Image 1: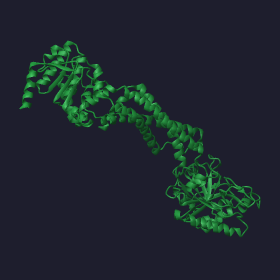
Image 2: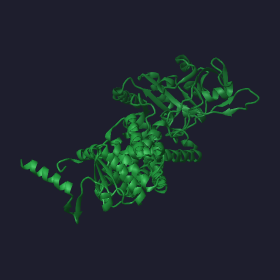
Image 3: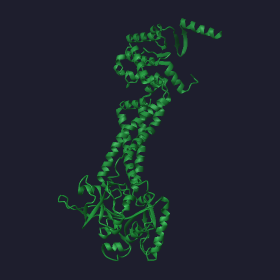
Image 4: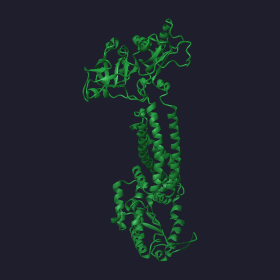
Amino acid sequence: MFRYYIALGFRSLRRNPVLTALMVLTLSVGVAASMTTLTLLHGMSGDPIPHKSDRLVYVRMDNRPADNRNNDIDPPEQVTHRDAIALWEAGKALRQTPLYGVSPAVDSGRDDLPPFFVDGVAAGRDFFAMFDVPFLYGQPWSAEDDQRGASVAVLGRSLSERVFGEGVDPTGKSIRLGEKEYLVTGVADTWNPIPKYYRLIGSQSFDTSEEVFVPFRTAVAAEMGINGSIDCSEALPEPGFRGYVLGECVWVQYWAELESAGERQAYLDYLDAYTNEQRALNRFARPNNNRAHTVTEWLEVRNVVSDDTRTATWLSLAFLLVCLVNTAGLLLAKFSARPGEIGVRRALGASRREIFTQYLTEAGVIGLVGAATGAGLAAGALAWIRKFDPGLDLVARLDLPMLSLAIALSVLTALVAGLLPTWRACQVVPALQLKSQ
Amino acid sequence: MRGLNDNARSKLRNEKLGFIFQGFNLIPDLNLFDNVDVPLRYRGFGAAERKRRIEDALSQVGLASRMKHFPAELSGGQQQRVAIARALAGGPRLLLADEPTGNLDSNMARGVMELLEEINAAGTTILMVTHDPELAARAQRNVHIIDGQVSDLSHETQRALAAATAQADA
């Protein structure tokens, strides 16, 4: 019987094309506005690594001098090179990595490919396992490479294909980054976590992942320029890059992966013990103010989802409500014009429940058509957003779950809008209607 | 009837009664097949059974060849025949006809009456309201209603009522 009602619903669309078009347009505009903002919100606020986001912690320590003018209660968002190395060497977590952004120049040695800069990350080998980086070829460099600062690198797929060609495994070959040759140990497959949680400083929150990865010590030894922010609370002991390495300058982002979420307090205790120990060396003048943010906490701290996005989402949902009320009015007009048919159906044996189901299904069919149009409009709006803000290229895309949500939202809106008109349709007294025919 | 709820009344209308209206009351955007199908859908018949009943009913009223036509493509008499087919398709025990020829010219009215007589002869009771004495004269029993009051019963009807009263008294 439900298929019969669906068929009647689609047939009814043709009955009053102008009214149908108005309803579909009203619904689709409301759905498109909601889906556009919800897609952005969904992309921005999603958990990028749900199976371990509560075990991956981002470390912050307050190394500011006591007389520093910055009295923000929150500690700096990065750590010093010295602290990063100390924590890394202590290895108190299951996995850990310091990281900073680099932008080395790539010289392929090919005449047809002039040197170019790439976005990269200097990190420890644990980086790949911690952040679930998929490998197309080869593997990460070894722990020994980390220790000795070996000249090795992992390439991103796009860089590998650009330099060595598509479908070519460059493992074991070398690539020139800056002034040195690096042995390629592996190629990371396309990997774009949204948001790009592991490097929220020095990179766009919704940017694509880096094209080259080099060991942290190797990058520091090669004095690969820091692609990110540097904040020094004291005068540099030496000029240039070495000064950043030796001084109280925060420019390293530090992540640890814990065995379990429950170990976070123990890790914080360890950080407190570390800063207490450092205090003996006249560092960490302020009381302990260490943090170990989970991924979701860190995204919140960095305000990855802006208040503007949240406000726009609420406004679009309010607009959808207005569209719902309008659709209800139009459905009322549509159904009110058909008491004769309702009377005939009732006389021929339809119960009130059957009339209710038929007309509510008809409203649902309008919602379905509205969903198709609305999804099209939302896809168009998202394409427009991608064009005008390339930073949202990865986020402003209507994926399958969001498409399903668009359909569900539209049908649900139409059903809610159809409740009153349908209830009114059920109240038709057949005898009165048939007498007046 | 009074004690029945909406579902039970609907079931009764669907299974036991057939309705023929003065204004035909066909659904304009359904073709003849789908119009006759309406009461059968509520009856819950399977597709094959519905198809058989629809074809039989439309054949009975002489419109089997026009199943895919829409009501607006038919004359008034033909539309009333479709309405009769719709009423017959469910195999009702009683057909209620409210001035079935009221909107038809005399030729078409005659055709519809002949059809109703055939149906009646085949065993279906028909209760018909009409203002036309000529058509009323063709009925087996007549009840005259003036201003909502039964004012006169035909001889046949009086006899039938008397018999029923006597039987009740006994």
